[in-house]
Image (cartoon, rainbow, N blue to C red; front, side, top):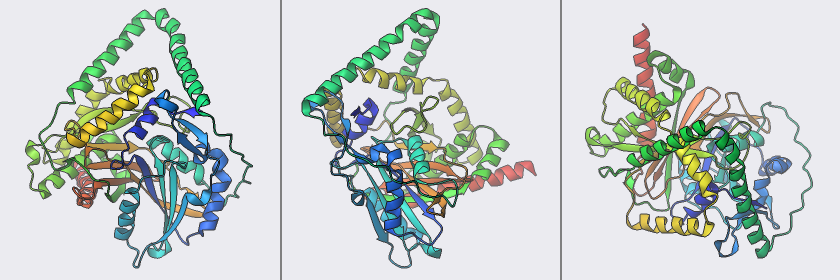
Length: 466
């Protein structure tokens, strides 16, 4: 019986029937498609590597502890696998519509929090897997690790023999309470064991505390409210989704020509996309402030394959007010260099560590109150979310078929009507843009404009080198 971390639990608390807290991806494979029976055999053979796939979340009585993972005694793999055939001609628009429909449906809290959909009928005999997992189980990095477990790095790989499994008995209410408070004592003990090291290096400890304090101050300053924009405000339960992709080699060419990092180039292109979106809506980007939350992984060495959330975040402003793409890149590069020294990510990680000691009843009550307030007064401090996750740079295979593309999905929450996920795979960068269907049906324009922004920067880089 494992407890959810404070951040894992928070993703559960934020879900309210309107804001769905699952992440997902669309994997496109070469044909021909397998049968759903073949897919079931694949997943069954690897379930022993993914224990969370057979576990459900259960609460602790009276919220005396964080929720726990327990074996689902009625686990049935067929409840988590579906097969869908796209209507002819099965084009990309149809797949994107299906993705929006599937992402509008919450996962069943009574069962393990995942679902995989086999989609047939894509052009050229291709097919797709849509992997949908609750955010309380994985973040972007561990989501990629999950994909790597399900797929193979070689085309012809024999499936392992399924290992026998018998669910552990469902723990009683009393056992859950005891486990919760034993775990809380363990968290406190772990922090206490760090004290000797802190006392042995008082200068370093003071420096660390100072950095954390500076990070909190910088984060607080970035939470000032912005002028209203159409990309923020209340949302409904339905989603729309669009995507685009570019060559990773092109992005690296731009980086080499103008400096910075791959992430800087990506954020500059996203900034140009939002500028085009605002212009298309009749808004003035020159006077706009678009502030994005950027998740930052805080996984230590050896934690890449663990299924949980180990992220903090920074806040940065996308330079939508700049019309020139090279100027946008320079702005982003300078801002990100400053933010890396701001200690925002360290401050967020420290808060999560301290959150492990807070009474779960207070945290859950506070989260629910915050969600109710956002229904009435949507926040205007964060306009959007932009997450960038490195994926495998080699081909992956499912039942002998090569995965040709991987397109990511990021959830949106109250006050944030549009979000962008970026993921690299085998020489390409894919952009997946999520929108609230009622207020942001035009996210396809944003996805297209982001890719066009990379193309424009590549042309400028070629001109510079010629």
